[in-house]
Image 1: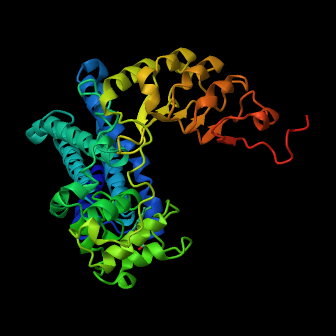
Image 2: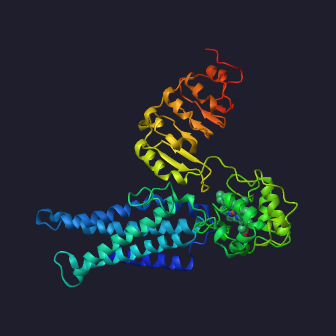
Image 3: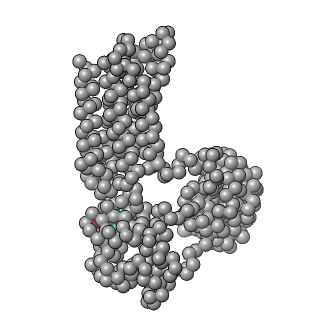
Length: 469
Ligand code: HEC
């Protein structure tokens, strides 16, 4: 019987998946490029079982009325399809997790949620095939609860997956039931575990070199790939203990011996070396940061050795971390109000509250008008980057931007602003980059622009000077 075969395949595959999950769990190590290639289709494939399972529920419910009986009859077929697609997506998901360098609690929860969903779907299918049609008998009464369980499991699993892709607070960030806050990024601690390690707590009384110099450097450059949810090479660099524990090939720091430490080796290779860290062309550590790490390992890689002990360490570029804009946290209500009005977003640039905000309008550029910019009010000074491409702003809006004293990057591409309007920006002393692509401002006018801050302007005026027309 074909339905038996479907069931049998489903059952065998589900058991095989569970066996894979137990014996080869996602451990943060990247493997086999082909497996990663295939695995990435998981992200696309998962939507199939989600849609199909919900369709089964709707077909069963609507099909309960005799007029729509045909739907109920077809629901069994759709459930079979949903189950197979769930098993297929789970397999791809396991492939992605195992080969793609994923690990951590969230991935495990998502993976096991997927496997349980497969098992429950197979069970629901079995019960439905054997007992439900054409009339309910025996175990048929188990079908509705099983289908409900499958849907609940599916929603939970999908939510864990969403958190994995978009971050923990993706769904709740703009919830009306939550106190407004632009992202969770503002609270260091969870990931930047400097303050959560016992070692760092001890250091809080007497600043340790590790906590003040080494950890923040690793935090900025390395923790993105070596953390709880993504520990590439099995290595986590977000706490002192885990850093000292090392990765899949053992410790990466050999106290007293920088040259013999894998971590130091990796950051001192030529940047084009394929073993260089950070990998993938990410912004490397600053030279003084590399030096701190060297000195720190040479002095014994201690969590508590005080800052004052490292007399030869180069000073940080700016002794206090650069403050790009005032702390935005007191302005959360104003930020939320502006976002609501403008349809734009004010996103923190980093988890340091003094790194300023990015004004994003890309999701609804046409809503962003001169009038909206005029509403910026006290928030203006917090904005460090403004992405205004394709918005409706004109020279009038540029006058409002003059209040954004901390603006460093401004994208005006594809807007109606003119060279005359840019005069309003003359007072922006910190402006570093200005994008004027596809505005009415031609290359000749750009060459004539003289803004006080002399920002990098795109498109660059051609080297031969003003364009011959
Ligand atoms: C873009 C992601 C990414 C970033 C950022 C990154 N790493 Fe890695 N790291 C990897 C990957 C992938 C591997 C495994 C492949 C390899 O060994 O080259 C790895 C491996 C390592 C290893 C080898 C571990 C072992 O046991 O073999 C060390 C040490 C390391 N990284 C240190 C760092 C340091 C220090 C930084 C920051 C300066 C950093 N990584 C930033 C992705 C990254």
